[in-house]
Image 1: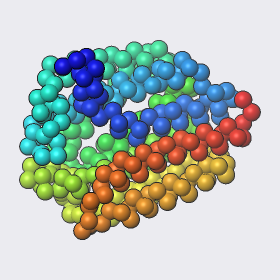
Image 2 (image 1 turned 180 degrees about the vertical axis):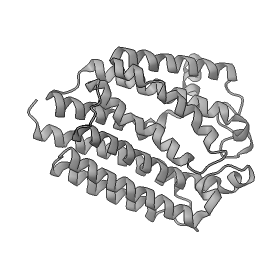
Image 3 (image 1 turned 45 degrees about the vertical axis):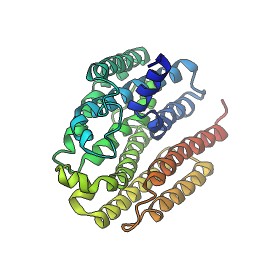
Image 4 (image 1 turned 90 degrees about the vertical axis):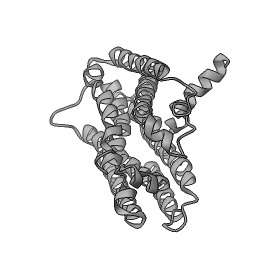
Length: 300
C-alpha cells in the first residue's frame, strides 16, 4: 500500500468527512470572541492552533471509540467493513494514532493559553467514557453531544484565556451554545441510530431507538431539536446578535423541519441525507450567518 493510500485509509478510519459537524462551532467560538471582545479578526496563529487542537482531539476520540467497539463493529453489517474491524489497519496502528492525536491536542492547548491546557484533560476523559455509556444507558446520545459541544467553548477560551465567575452574558451565551450543540447532536444521532435498531437490541446496546422504539425515538429526536432551537434563540439574545443571524436562525429552523419531514417510522431510506447533508448545512449556516452578523455590526 502506498503512503497516500495509507493516509486515505487513516482519514477513512477517523471519518474525516464528519469533521464538518463540529469544526464550524470551534471557529464560531474563535470569531465571536475575537470580534465581540477584541474588535479584531482572529489571527492565523490562533486559527491554526484551534484547528490542530480540534483535529487532534477528534482523531483521538474517534480512534478510541473504534478501538473499544471493534468486536461489536465486526458483527454489524453496516460497520464490518470499516478499516479496523475489516483488518485493514492494526490495533498497534490505532494506538499510534491515539498517541499522536492527543499529543497534538495537548501541545496545541499548551501553545494557546494556560486555561486551555488546564481544561484539556476533560476532552479525552469524556471521549473514553462515551463508547462504554451506550452499553448501559440511552443517555449516550447526549454524551456524544457533549463531546462535540466542547468545540464552541474551546474556540472561545482559545481567544479569551478566561471564563468569568459570575459569568458575563457573553460567557453565558457560549455555555448556552454548548447546550444547543448537545441537543442538536443527540437529536440527529438518535435518527442515525434507527439504522441499527435491531442490531442494538440483539447486542444489548442502549440506543434510544432500541430502548423505546422507532416512533418514540423520532419524538425524542424532535424534542431534542426543539430544545436545540430554543437554546440558539437564547444564545442570540444573550450575545445581542442582529437581524442577519436571525435570518440564519430561520434557515436553520427550516433545515431541522426538513430533516424530520424526510424521516418517517415506515420509511428510513433518507437517514443518510438527514444525518450528513442536512446537519452539515446546519453547522455551516450557523457559522456563516453569525460571522456575517458580527462583521456587519462591528468596525474592525
